Image 1 (cartoon, each protein chain N blue to C red):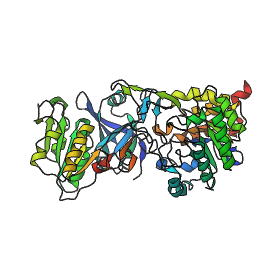
Image 2: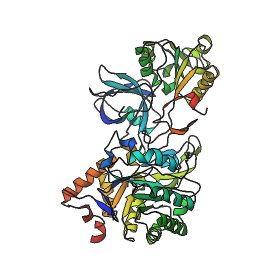
Image 3: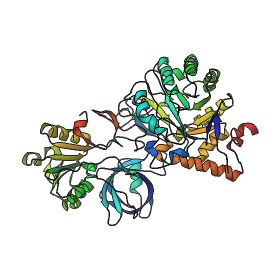
Image 4: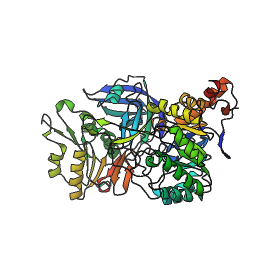
Amino acid sequence: MAKRIDDLKVIGNKRLNNDFFILELFAGTNIADFKPGQFAQVRIDGSKETFLRRPVSIHDVDYENNTFKILIQIVGKGTKMLSGLAEGDLLNIIYPLGNWFTLPEKTEKVLLVGGGCGIAPLLFLARYFKFNGFIPDILLGFRNNARIIEFEEYSKIGNVFITTEDGSVGEKGYVTSHSVFSTQKYDRICCCGPETMMKALAAYSKNRNIICEVSLENLMACGIGACLCCIVDTVKGNICTCTDGPVFNVNDLKW
Amino acid sequence: MVNLGFSIGDLHFKNPVLTASGTFGYGSEFDDFINVSRLGGIVLKGTTLEPREGNLYPRMAETPSGMLNAVGLQNKGIDYFEEHIYPRVINYDTNVIVNINGSYIEDYIALAERVNKLKKIRAIELNISCPNVKMGGMVFGTNLDSSREVTREVRSVYSGKLIVKLSPNVTNIVDFARVVEEEGADSVSLINTLLGMSVDVAKMKPSLSTVTGGLSGPAIKPVALRMVWQVANAVKIPVIGIGGIMSASDALEFILAGASAIQVGTASFIDPQSSVKILEGIESYLLLKGFSDITEITGFINRTT
């Protein structure tokens, strides 16, 4: 599918808490065909210190209203500036980029696992899976109650399990220690979050012959396979996260 | 109509906007965004004899108005290039330039011989200025004797146009430009990246796996421009200006200072359409100023001062 570069109108900027916000963009009637797991490169205007674009996951797509959402965590100057965008502002964006999560066989039992900002691509993924005829379980990990985001949205699609590091909501600890892994038997795990979390899930999956796909967020400059900065070491050698990923089967990674 | 063309010897370029090696892949990465054939030329990702995996991650760090990279010439080697890339890249209606790199002088010679047989490739860019490899690269381009020798040897086996890409990491870049001109280079392109580094304060370690890397982007433009101006005033062969060109205005600074052409590099990462926008901007400028041929403004500032 063709990649695009557009100035898209911001039609909503919803602050979820101190650290997270969702930008909703109007894509026009000729909206791109998005696949779950894909990302976009957004330009940051107005500062010499934010020279490069920022890669952001496609959080959700609404084909009826020709809009899509990006969920962003404020981590530095670039994301801080994005958080200040208001309705009517234009955002220069290159999209849709990268590959996507594989659509499972319908008999498979699937678990989506997200940690922190890693939950971003999983809403569209959950919606996509449900649209294709089966309902995933969704396990989301947060630091504490105040940082839980988008719970209601995920709950509309499948069973949602929560972990918090302080135990304020759901099970206490990290997603990797959740009881769902001992009580349920999954055929496939789709995962996005901190690398330590994804590595733990990769090891768990490999030991049990569970299909496991992870979404990586390596530093990148171009996002279109030209700069070769975002490489990941795989069984096929160094390949680009932006074009060969961001979604990888863990068997291809040297984890 | 404005004539934007320029020539290196008998090799004609329809306009002065080229893309810099390592920032434009093999062209196809940009097919969704621009008509690559509109450009004066494209310089392909650096090619070596053997496949190279490049340096470890992280290879990139954002810096004020720029970026550091330490890719380390990752590429699949000349065999793969001949078999898989050459057949499709020659479909572009533009000059396709192969950027060649080696660890030893023999590598450069062997590569030049191989590319010499590819009839649709009419120019090579001899990269003696890559700062991100342990052997070769900048080692050649920061030593006058080595620069002379590698240019001479490649010249003796390569019959197309020989462009030598110069390193800014030297005391006097003019000396290097003169040496490669004496040895038969048809053109020089400059500058490659400036050696730099960055430290991640939060992690308390270097930002790049290699510690040092090559700085590019608007941060280096004034340095690049100064060097292009110096070289353009010292050699007779065409000079191709590179370094932080983000807009037509940036490109025109280089041309007015003496560059016959320019390469768009890092800008393509920020805006994949920047090369074509720069081309259009140069044409508009010439029309607005009432010039009919770009050569009327090449080195303009050197004539009036």
